[in-house]
Every structure is written in structure tokens, then in C-alpha cells.
Image (tube, rainbow over all chains, first blue to last red; front, side, top):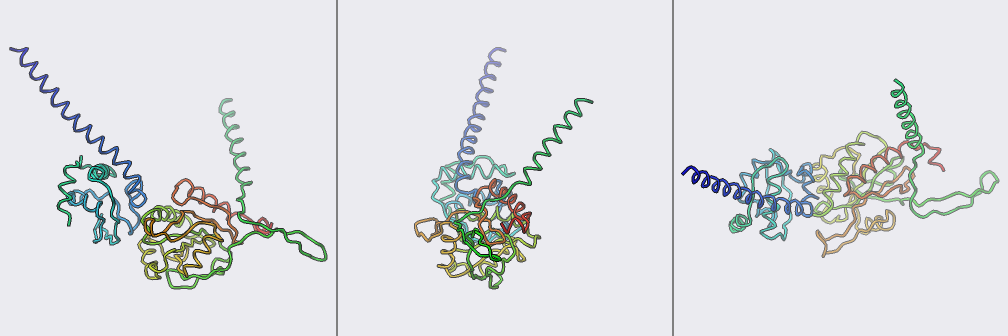
Length: 137
Length: 219
């Protein structure tokens, strides 16, 4: 009896641990690919540390803005941004150009940005990005 | 104790060497040069004439006319950009801002940023750009002028490629060079404005150039 319980709990434990590492593995994969995309496509404007450029280009360090606009981030990156945004209490009115990134690439780069520069939002998956893109205005 | 003295000796020796090196550093002079024979006080002497930036005339972000006389006696850094540039300009001006902040209170230093899209980049647009970048005063000028003159100056005199290309991102091809020009309007250095390390080198070179005495300048 005792042995059975131990074996069962061991199996359960292994399952939980392996599940977690699956998630972590996915996160790492997204984050690493996202970091490369960021260097190639975002860094010139937003900076190595997501610091932006004075009042011309917003920083990517406003965790509150990122969390509040989580569903719109994919739209911003794909279609560009033409409206005024308030980041860290400062207004930015210049436009951001559109990109030709695929949904998977969008998910990767968004996972990188929302988990760098002091942000910690976890994985933004390709499935989520696809759903968010349906809602773009 | 002995060890300490030895160490001290090494440190002193090393710093002495470095000090000497620092004194010897001079920057190259770029461009074509001609030998000219002149007669001075009845004697024939051969003089070297260096290539210089010719006279120019542009308008800055305040609507003021800026000519070669405006930078008389100044060291300056020149670059070419446009405000709607999606590619390398932001990183160039992030780096240029570093130079600006280091030298904005230095009276004999200027930055001239020429727009290669004067149709869009009017004086008002340039002023707004400067304001948003956090640039004020008269150290960093954003210059607007006839397109042909700007392109000519870039290609023939600063020797950097600038041209319109509707296929390129933003419609223009240009290279992110920062050009260092001395008080005689001679080119003394080229630096990749997108590369932080080269920009640090430029900052060091500006300091070196500022220590050049009139005697060295006359050579």
C-alpha cells in the first residue's frame, strides 16, 4: 500500500516537473528567437536596452502600458502605430512603421520585449498572437 | 616593501609611456592634396594645399542662415539624415546625442546634421525634431537646403554616398558616417555613426583635435 502511494506520487511529481520544464522550454525558445528579431528589427529605434530616444521614440520599459495593452501589442508591431501613446507618463506622437513579421515571429519578439528591460509577462504564444491579430482595428 | 616599490615603479613607468603616446597622437588629414610653389620673401617654397569643405549655405532649425563662416574657428561633426528615416537614423542620433551632451558647453564645437529630404524636413519639422531629441542652443544645427547642393556636398566633399531610392526603406539610401572636420575645414576622420565603439573613438578624437595648437595647424 505504502509503496503504491509513493510510486503514484513520484509519477505525479515527474509529470508536474516535466510539464513545467515544457513551458519553460517553450519560453526559452520564444525568448531566444525574439532576442535576435529584436536586434535586427527593433533595436535601431528602441535601443539595446529598450530605452527609446528622447521624446521621439518611446522606451519599452513601461510594464503597466504593456500589460494593459497586451492584446494590442501584436497589432502595433504588425501594422505600425499612428496614434499618440503615453509611455511612462510622457506623450509620443510619431508614427511607428509596419513590419512583415509572421505571427510566430511576432510572438517571439513580443515574448522577448515583455520579459526584458524590467518587464515580466511570461510567454506570448503564436496562438495568442493569431487571436489578437483578429481584433486589430 | 621591496615588492611594493617594484610595483610602483612599473605603474609609474607604464603611465609615463602612456603619457608620451597621448602627446604624439595626431589625426590624419583626408582628401587630395596638392603641392603649390609660392614665393615668400623672395624665396621659393613648396606648400601643401589640403582638400577642404567649400563654402556652403543652409538654413538651420531656427530659420537662421548657416554658412562656412558660421563654423569659422570651430571643429565640427557632419552627418546626413532625414527625420522620417526608419532604419539607421535613430541609432545614429542616439549616438550623436552622446557627443552633443559631452561637448554642448564647448564654444569651438558644432554638429551639422544635413537633411537629405528637404521637401518634408522643413525648418518647422527640423525644429520639432530637435526639440523632441532634447537639443537646444547653437551647438547642434539641423540644416535644410537645396537638395542638389546637399547631395553634392555629401558626395563630392564629405565623400559619403547619399541618394534617393524609392526601393529602399524610407526612400533613401545613405550611409551612417559621422565626418570630423577641423578648424581649417579639412576632413580628419570618418566614423560609423551606428557603432558605439567608433563613436567613443570620435569623442576621443575631438578631444585630441581640440589640443592641436595653431603651430600644428599651420603645418
